[in-house]
Image (cartoon, rainbow, N blue to C red; front, side, top):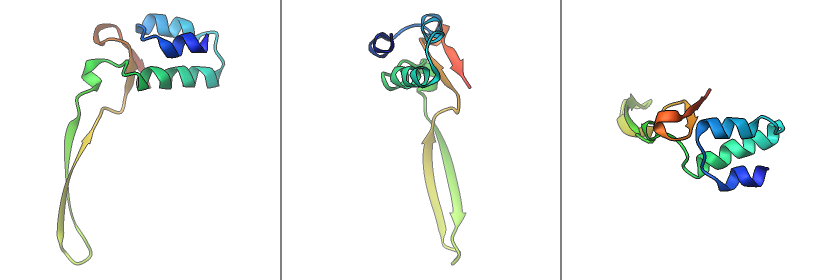
Length: 85
């Protein structure tokens, strides 16, 4: 069954139903496989720029921009996704 979950991109409802009989390690592997295949809603694909400014011990200013994703994961297409917290 795990092989089937790894090969398919499925909706959230289908995915949850297929996870139910699995042991924890298999569930975690199936979730990772779906995310690695890119099966997540489009709203989670938008990176947000965080601007960071700080001074070191000598007072020299440093600036950086870090692009991040939301800290929530979801599996499935945008309109019918499953949020994993």
